[in-house]
Image 1 (cartoon, helix red, strand yellow):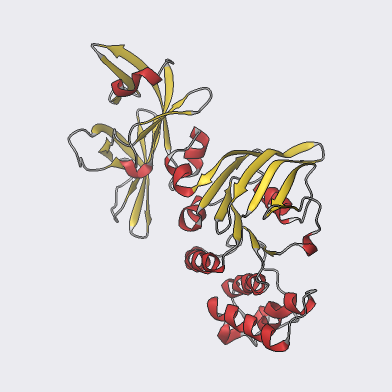
Image 2 (cartoon, rainbow, N blue to C red):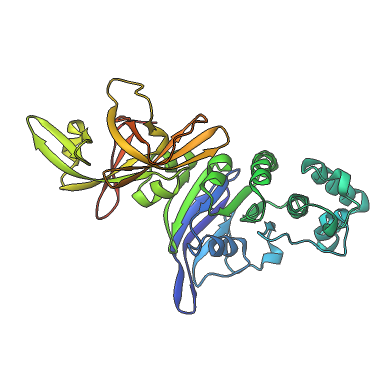
Length: 366
């Protein structure tokens, strides 16, 4: 059945940290809570897990109201951002520690089986007799994760568990966690500020901003149909380009004019467009440096930054004072100050209302 969160409100020092948050996370889901610092994602995670109690609202686990149930009486496991391990215990004993103090009495053989199975899953079998100070940062976090998994809890909560790892380790653990936690079953709730974490691991995503849950749903739905410009901007990698445009009608056409060079024909959607100004959303990979189809729209821009990211290149450009980000899926060099021609795909655009920032039109499915 999973987790149901209904109307959760939480205040700190008179400030609303969570504002009437509701969502349902089905059994077997890997749900990511996404947002900037102070958006409320960690507080929501802790409230759902039972570490903190809400001021208002209810929480159900598998149909049971657990709103006031102490965390010790819930079938939950928690992994934190910091490497929380006991320095005086070996890796083996760290993983075994929650089993030894559990109200459920585990036999020696059962404890040993769980420790070794999870150590093997997380690549720790060769360091089980080491102490935390003798292993790497990645191994420390793997130990904390293995300790949580050894409990075989129904609900697993992770609060930015990859934040203190370098880029390479983050990439490694993303893949491992995705496979391990999906095999485990139950419900996984993962808080992170990183869109890449959600894109690579989650089945469901919720985006929080200033304590409000702006959108929650299956990964594909939230990514392909962001209900607000703010969701589209944040839940993109790299960020979604947002361009201001004015609507013009004439000669049987309706166009959204962004600049002297760039006009997008939106005649097909004119019945949905009733304002004078809109925001045009363009994902970075839908801007190209080569014309791939005849209907693609050309514009010139100046390179302000070129970042090579492994096999990809992230170009930062300026077009008539408008900043743009282009993701090229190959390794290329573009000197700063170079003027280049880029092409916009008119069949991969989002149109948002300028004031409410709500999605009005998506020109074609992705």
